[in-house]
Length: 58
Image (cartoon, rainbow, N blue to C red):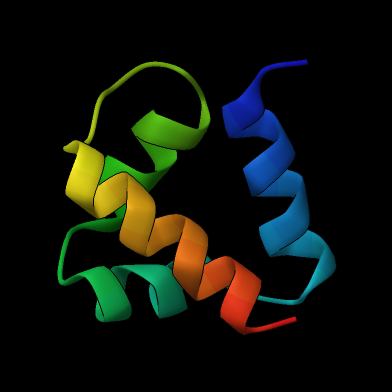
């Protein structure tokens, strides 16, 4: 399993919706979906903010 899938599972387990992530990161849900499904990229800074948001909402 990829690291991205691990983060997607953590997000889902903590009841964090994609819309919550998109609002926090100020990006589209398409970008988050593509990233989580290994079909797109995000900047390293945005990835770090993505991870921090999920960890901070445990």
